[in-house]
Image 1 (cartoon, rainbow, N blue to C red):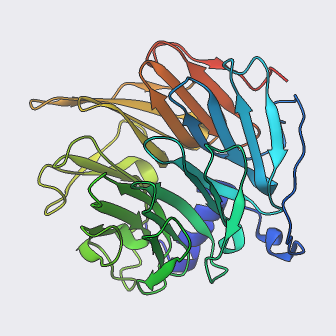
Image 2: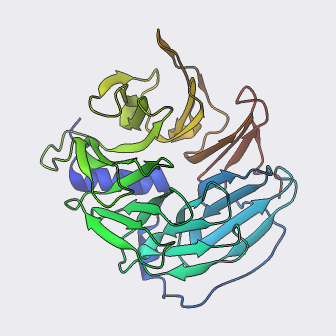
Length: 334
């Protein structure tokens, strides 16, 4: 199947994030919007980002600046909106004192108190920022449309933009040492060893190869072993830190939009039509059990211990307390 650059971007908009193109016409919001309610996710809302914090509480972000939190596994909710723009990714530093949220129109918000309050930082651009990866309290990387590769070394006071052609990058994975990978259109995989200051091509990177689809997500279960996922159940794997990538095929012909590591031997993938695949990894073989706890597209999965939380389109929130063996929908608890 040939996929043009414009079609690949359209697929990403429609399938990966459910973005609304008309959102670009929203009037700019200068101040901080706050509201507090007890209602949980609503069926018309798109939820793009999920986190399970160390204390077990949930943080979920979505369209129109929505941030939802729950301290009791979805029984009750706290709701607020921090900006009139979609938030596509919200991540915490390892100690959870700092957090960044990125999204539509180049927005970047920072919290220095674990997500209680948020202030806007200057990205110096308006490209969609689709994912943020946090290395430590001072260093983070954000990636998105038009080849955007942003990084900060000073807690977000200054964001520096690099560009790789005009490709869209959908995901970024970072380690505590500043090594990282980002993936995007035309099966592009870039690698950094200096927290995003410089990037090297490990695969793809040629926008003239229209037959190559996008990679939507990347995850490393160990320093050498990583996986990227994309359209039509396609997966590439590496066992040498990305020097070489080997192709394989999932048992379903569906796009996978997100990956989440459960352990060095266990990786979850999720995506179109609520499809979840539990990759059980060992040195001899890989098995791919498939489940469908929902019919809605999944945009993000968070894992902490045996707790697993997934969010997506149409207000979807599904939760497992036993490592993914059983799932329940939390979307009805409003």
